Image 1 (tube, helix red, strand yellow):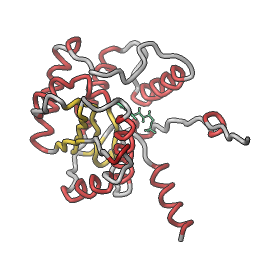
Image 2 (cartoon, rainbow, N blue to C red):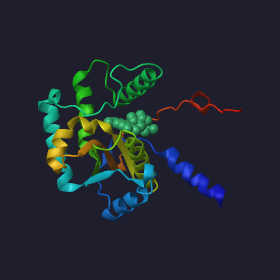
Image 3 (cartoon, rainbow, N blue to C red):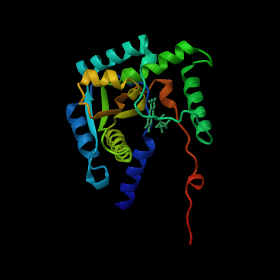
Image 4 (cartoon, protein in one colour):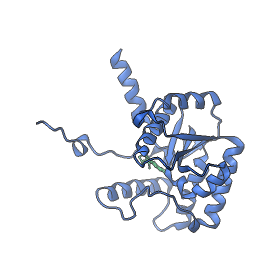
Length: 229
Ligand SMILES: Cc1cc2nc3c(=O)[nH]c(=O)nc-3n(C[C@H](O)[C@H](O)[C@H](O)COP(=O)(O)O)c2cc1C
């Protein structure tokens, strides 16, 4: 029994990938509700559960997507995240890891180095939730300490795993936070709500080459130290 359970859990965790092309098929409200209920079992310091999530589908999704895409097309220089999610000046070993995934992605999409317009359009796909029928927007009370980001991460991962277990795929997207002002306006967020990012959720387009991306991981021996004494 224990072996079966660990195999199932390991399979779900290991088969989760960030999916960047979805079919438009709707996801049932019931499935979204269940996923969020399961995900809310995530750990959080002091059980504070500092997450809030806005579920966008249909008309609300279109409204937010249209508003952000318009800003992206016309005034991208006016928008930025209120927190730093990637280092301003990257460094090793993170720089190489990031480069590798970027190159692999552009190669699968057939985008050549220096093709700025196709890169821009691919970047824009983020703000269409890659065509997913569900868009999630995450916020957190800005009065909370930065350590609450750890709780958010646990919550996000639970959503992705619970979704995967139900045949749904996801892509976590902090890039949405670049357009936090537009999202804040469209969702009428409170003054204290810091917009952290978005997540696409839906049915993967199995024919899209981008979805064959399989990012490597460094081996355990590279990131773990077994302290003997
Ligand atoms: C906090 C966070 C933010 C991310 N933001 C984006 C994003 O804005 N756009 C995107 O396409 N992928 C984004 N990703 C997905 C990562 O690129 C992806 O997890 C990583 O390349 C490993 O690939 P995998 O998820 O398929 O294993 C994000 C992931 C995390 C955890």
